[in-house]
Image 1 (cartoon, rainbow, N blue to C red):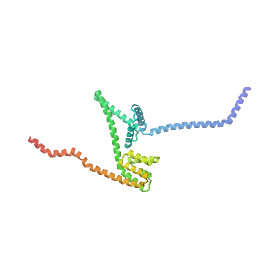
Image 2: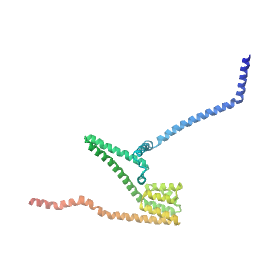
Image 3: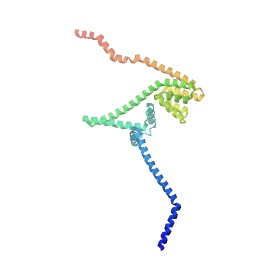
Image 4: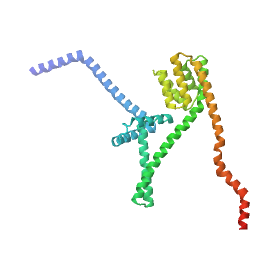
Length: 310
């Protein structure tokens, strides 16, 4: 009897609790279950999006860049290069002038990797030729130095060719910029119009300058950096004139018109100077290919007759 009372009381309490809090607890359980499902779905989507984002990156960013960073971190411990800020800044400036977006650390790591590869090629050549130990060392050093010299030559030639293209494109860019400002556009808006209308390495550098100015950098700083990146005499004079015009309150359209005419005259004088050098440069192929043939034609019969008389 007492057991039945206890069981009945417990059942009654259960029914009361269930009737009072059952619906709320059921909703809470439903909410917790839904939140857990959403978290699982979010993690799954995040994992897939991370995989898709990783696989959509270029091969250089997925494989080569981490490899170069690893090599750079290892070599910096053995041969510290960060302390030589002057050398790092010089290499960084050369990479910017060549149009490469690679960092200084990655470039040095790539250079070291290729130099070691050239050294091992020299060792492989020595092994095939069955040379002695001294030849192994010489070929290893020759391979390392050859790769270093080749990379330096490629970098300097890239800088020279890119600078020549920018110098050739500078007068057209200045004309379009000057016409845009005289038509009523502001200087920044005229720069945007030039970047949208033209293509080339100089336009790429001008696009970087426009973005820097849009993000809050002053016109003086952005134009100064433009001149340092390009390292062209006419462009440096143009940026200096624009900065000075802003400081003195001179109208930009007048400065652009004067600079455009000056750059055209400078371009014309450089072309005339190169044309005058043609007569001097043509002497080298004449001495090598034309004069020996003329000597053979003119003096050949005389030499043959003299040899016959002897």
